[in-house]
Image (cartoon, rainbow, N blue to C red; front, side, top):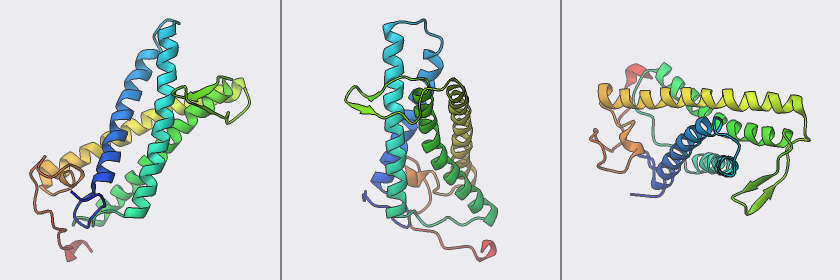
Length: 197
């Protein structure tokens, strides 16, 4: 497998960043739902610290992924109607925006609450704002709602990939996985269908 993206497939870097981001989001969502119900204890503080550190990591991964996408490009679009291409583009833009906005809103919430912020106890991060109860409430609500919006868009994104794979039989899903994980059509970029141009 090549490291770079090709006209037919996402490369190893794009695939690795994609699935690493998915794994971090799944952990972050599960840990957030669990930790808010925990009684105050050292374990809860440790879990919050881990959640914050992974949130900062997610922010860095999203920025890295966006930078790599701009540098390495994307595989050629598969044949399909214009509305499908427009929907795919819009969902990708929204996903990238949310991958940046969710951790930034968490950072803002932490800052407005007056809490220190460290990345795995190694690096101290500056506050994005002075302590402010009103801003804290706003940032907390934004963090929560942006996360649920991210979940919704990600589920639609995953459902669309499965729909393409199971019902259209194209390589949308296969080209984001290592070769041989799922069966698909040719790895060569398909010719454009003039009926959808």
